[in-house]
Image 1 (cartoon, helix red, strand yellow):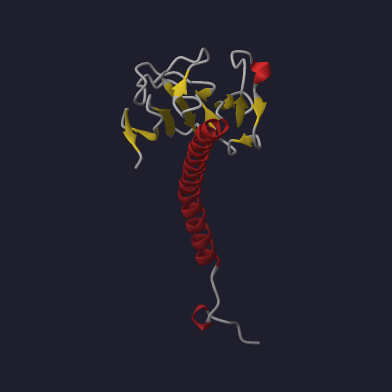
Image 2: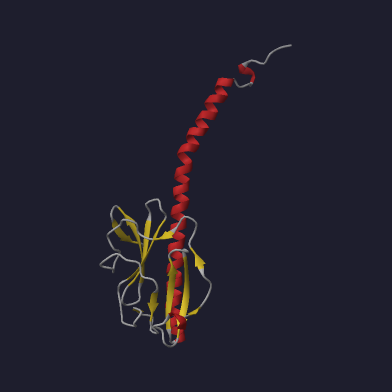
Length: 185
C-alpha cells in the first residue's frame, strides 16, 4: 500500500498547527476591534433615537398647545415622551405619549470622568427631563426659559455622545474626541 506524500495534497501536522495558530492570532486581533465597532454603532443609534424623540416631543408640545418632555430613567436606561396640559409642576399631571424606549445593550446615560461640557452647557450635567413649552422652546421645571439642557451617553469603552438643546430649540449632537466635544453634522 502506497502512502500519500506531502506533495500529493495531504497536510502535515506542523502545517495544520501553523494554520490553526495563525487563525487564533487573527481572531484575537479582530474580535476586540469588531466589539468596539458594534458598541460604537449602538452608541450612534441611541444618540439618533434620542435626538428623534426630542424633536418629536418638541413638535407634540407645539401641536397640543401644551408642555412636552422627554423624560429619562438613567437606572433603567429608558426614555419616553410625556405631555402636560395643566399644572405641569407636578409629575402626576404628565401623560406618557408613545412607547418607552430602551438604550441598546452596553449603552448607558453618563459621562464618567469627563469634565468638559458640550455646548451650550457651561457645566456638565444630565438634564432629566428635557422640557419644551407650547412653542417648542426649552424650559425648566418651573416653565422658565433655559439653554442648559443636555443628555450624555457612553458605551463604557471610552466613547461618548451628547445631545444638547439650545435656547432657540435647536437640537445638536456631539462626539467626544481628544478631550473636546465636536459637533456632528
